[in-house]
Image 1: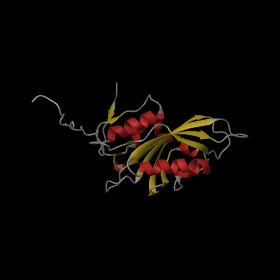
Image 2: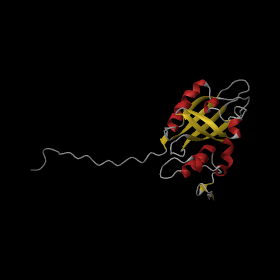
Image 3: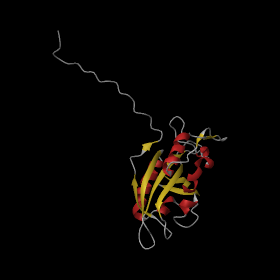
Length: 197
């Protein structure tokens, strides 16, 4: 049974406890969409994120390929062992993986949600570390996708910090948040010669 939380800013927010973190936050984000449009930043209610909150961050798109962290859960900050507010999201990635991140952010800047599979660097004091990162676009007051709701679901021990990701692979082809269903095409008719006279 799904419980609902009602707030002044949003109506009937789903309770997202019980699923994996990326699914929880993506489900919450989907629930805030109206008529296929991306949710507004002001619609986000931290109380509705429940147990996922320590793994969530909000970022602002500085350019179409750079996002700066504004609010960051402590489980995300544990990777670097410091307060990450004001830092670019790319700080969590090595140079090799930053190109994949910037490509994903370019999609988010167009209103597309993206999920990446991440692999952490390994070495002395750095055990195997995998993660999934969902980047969900949010609209500003003008309706433009200039904000990002992100969730980082990490599997494994962080080990020695700072800890960064060396690989960022898209989980699936991104789907535009506001893409309408494909229009039905009318059949094409043609005249066939040699019929009855």
